[in-house]
Length: 207
Image 1 (tube, rainbow, N blue to C red):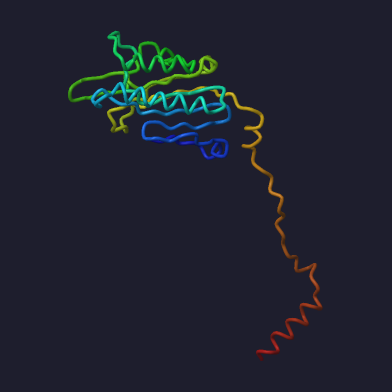
Image 2: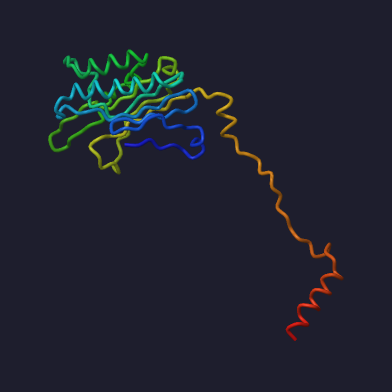
């Protein structure tokens, strides 16, 4: 798993934590958290899920931030009407960090199905985004990208959200003016007499 950052933002991004199930980056006052939570086939799934989310919460609490964008393969269908322990653990984590799921920002009629097994016809919505309540109204779009060039059984889930950026962060990203000057030599402004003397001396030695 990874988080890719555009080059122009790289200097403003700091790695907070990287583990086998999550990555946390900090961009200005916003934490970007990408997760791959255990699936139902993992032995002791709920215990591992709780350990993972607790670790994330501890890392978050040790960091100064204002907003969170939390997303990834959560392997939990939060729209399912069937109660299960894993969903309750995830919902408690989201509530503890004052987040809200962004699934309701999907286009009307789109149930957010991101996992499909074409051979069996099985499908589920197990990839999600959740954001701080302060960012919820800044979400411009959430959509599932169904592309023929994607060979994975997961369809990418996209979120377009406007992040607040401090004046310092904007200043840090401004291109710095180069202070050096390009120097050039002008033959018409050179010492012609010195040129003749040096030329004569150097050429005379090889003649």
